[in-house]
Structure formats: structure tokens, C-alpha cells
Image (tube, rainbow, N blue to C red; front, side, top):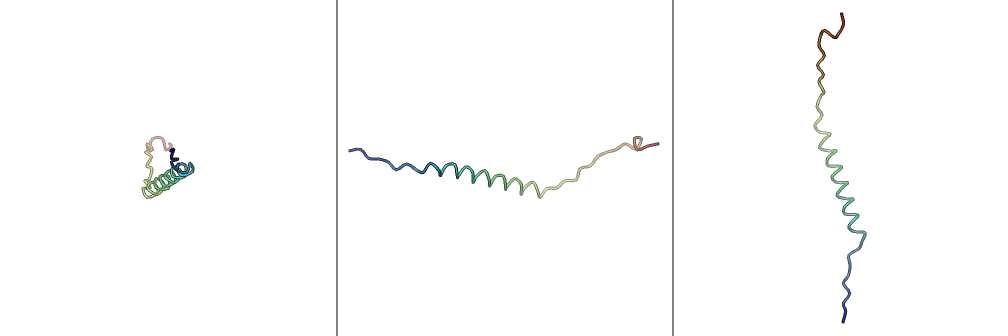
Length: 50
């Protein structure tokens, strides 16, 4: 007698991967928005003008 195994839905894997990717993107955006650093540029006083 041959028993047929139930195969998992083929749509479950791509949906899980997409959800994990969306969570990773939102998490990285949330982490990067908290740390706002100011950019400092050094301008020599001799180049400011005569």
C-alpha cells in the first residue's frame, strides 16, 4: 500500500521570507532613526576670504 504524504503549501515559504525581510527592514529603519549624529566640517580660516 502506498501512502501519500501531505505536502506543505508552497505559498507558506515565500510569505514567511517576505515577512522576515519586512521586519528586518522596519527594524533597521527604527534603529537608524534614533541615532542622529551631526556632521561636522572643518573649514580652515584662511579659505574663508581675504
